[in-house]
Image 1 (cartoon, helix red, strand yellow):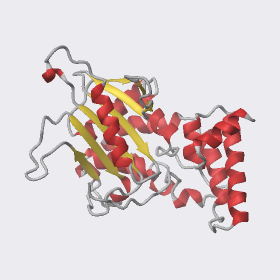
Image 2 (cartoon, rainbow, N blue to C red):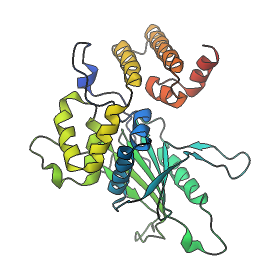
Image 3 (tube, rainbow, N blue to C red):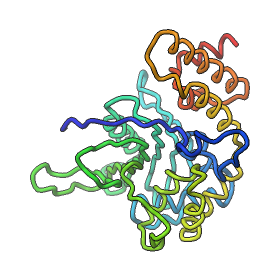
Image 4 (cartoon, rainbow, N blue to C red):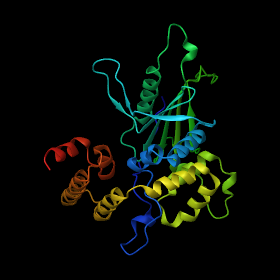
Length: 308
């Protein structure tokens, strides 16, 4: 596999939001690039969330998805010692097709491609086949929304990977599918853009990218009017509790000017991260979400939880 340089970008708010003072008006929506908000947008037990999920899947896959059920996001292990997997979102279509969705706010390492190939293989291996009825195997999709650039050599924001011949690109059965949406590569959209002419996948990408930007709320409204699923996602996000936002903004504002890698500043940053983590633990936030927001390793957060 060709080596690709990956540029990391955090799931932080837009500069316009980061510069907002306490007296300024809050944006209409919380940040959908944070795990808790992303999951809530598509898995909340309400009709709007269900409509949003079907619309998002249809846009990313390029085929209508009319029936979908959210499944338990932990993949069952098949033998002792096999790695446990906790997906962001796992779902199944009416025809048996399986999909797994990840929101990757920033790049943690240079092997995300290997990680998603493992994920999609586990999705397929969890399917049951009776006898030699291999044609009954369902399609499986791993769908990732990336807030960083994965492939610097390609300007397209949406990529659909399947197993193909290395010489003539002939495809096998097509049941293994990996789809990436790279948010930094999305085209600019302004007042003169004909929203209705944009592909649904681009509309969804712009919504996820700009929903928390107070300067882009007119665009968010236009996207919602043009796509029923986005309108439903807008409604769900509007109802999501913003305590996580307040904790994140507190941390963001406190360490914004501490970018030098000197020992005192790093120590101060760690203290702020730990304080924010303790506050979020007290509010019963999931450890994975705390790690995403503060940047602390999960092991450190677990130690904080054990010694409040």
